[in-house]
Image 1 (cartoon, rainbow, N blue to C red):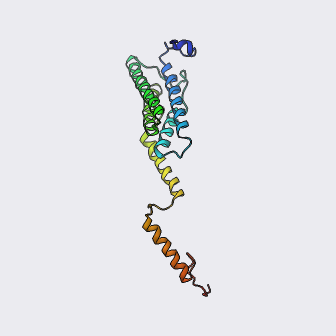
Image 2: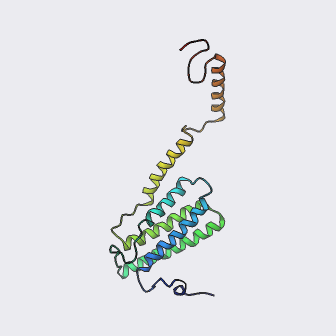
Length: 191
């Protein structure tokens, strides 16, 4: 049995053209939360972090429909806004299918697409509000990711088995020569 949305959500006036602003924010918030739950048990990749940061950037300071900097849309803009909302819903349906399949990488990409549509809706209603692009967010997050990973493994290269064996042999040679690793002082020699 289908229930009209107006019975489920008495706070929505579907005749108000600005209700799209509220719906877009709520839909992105839900998708963002579902994504966060999916990735919270592991270490989020740079892409996953960036997609979350992008959603956060678009949602931060979200205006009320009656905020002074929210503008009314003309008929052409309303049609474009509805197009963004329809695309957003298509991406949300795809996101749900990817969630069922456990495809976190697909969910990551789709969260970005949902966020892009919501950002377009916000830009239409709040044209003077500066919104970053995903590319800008991605660059910052990638730099942070690289820095974080450098703290875990400060070496830039991935050592091969031969590299590890060579390091072990060098350490054993230093021990047999009477040097302690890194100090360069031989046994019996005074500093």
